[in-house]
View 1 (tube, rainbow, N blue to C red):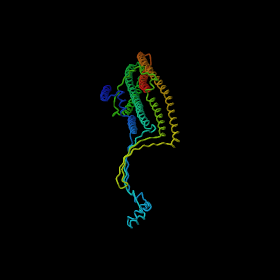
View 2 (view 1 turned 135 degrees about the vertical axis):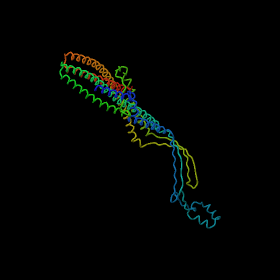
View 3 (view 1 turned 90 degrees about the vertical axis):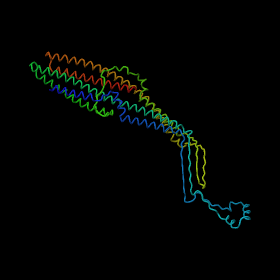
View 4 (view 1 turned 135 degrees about the horizontal axis):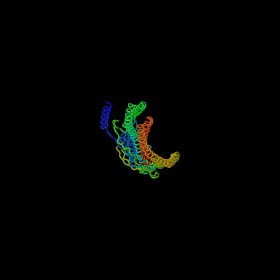
Length: 446
């Protein structure tokens, strides 16, 4: 009855597994790149850098502005008092005395008050075209372009980190799944041993203690299986959340055949320039050079030409006029602090250049270490494969010996444990090899 029940459970599990979606490693990495929050933030950074570059480009065009003013004062802003008798020449005064009536001549002796600009409207539009700005516009555009390139490199680094994390989760799940297969094989093996020992005990040719040792070993393997199942559930949910999958119930498509990684090896000196880390450092050097030029340009004269069209009705009449003009601004006192700002930028440039040289050596060392790790991991896989073969043969021999009555049950179970451990080590070695290969690829910019 127990056997029939087990067959039914296995059939149901097969139907559930068949209904689950299956993913390859590349599909999961692509999904993670599409849904991971770090990647989305990096893409937002690219969009922001693009807008900044477009903003900097507008500085090449004229700056157009419009102004308007209307006012109404409580009295005229221009007031004066005029005495006609003081401004009329004596020769003209003699002629006026003979031609004007007495009342008019008397009025000329009194001062006259004049008031102007009590209200009015002024409006105008002006276009200013920079001719020379100390290179600030050109270097500002170059800085914005470098900023956009830096944002793309930062996206690449974020993608590398996301791919690395997704692949680590992937191979952790693969490792647990392979261990589950080993546990299933061990359970079947122990079931056969239990059957043989039970027959021997009933026949009186074996001790019941041997049967208890097998059952204890079965309980231990069952406990390991429960732990593996629980860890698999957690890792499935973690990978699903990281990759933006709707459900944690899925299966993985993978190949456990270790392929020689020798074709991946690259010369560190040649691979250096293709890494995102090195390119970021070179961009930092370029940024400091441009910032130094910007600091120099801020202390140079600026020249601009412009044109304007204006309107006013200050004299109670509508008036319009156009004009052309040129301006020059020369910073004089700014040089006192500007010279120190220029020196500061020069020091920052030297610091960036030295950091580039130092980090380049560290990056090449990292490549060498990563390749050594790949070679070691590949050799460990080979050693683990031989261990599996040897432990399987050792288990077969001890099983034959036990059946022949020439070894104890503890020796047989020890051989079985060694076989299971060698299978688990092979699984871990293969997963570790895949992770080391990815690290090497990323370190060399592949």
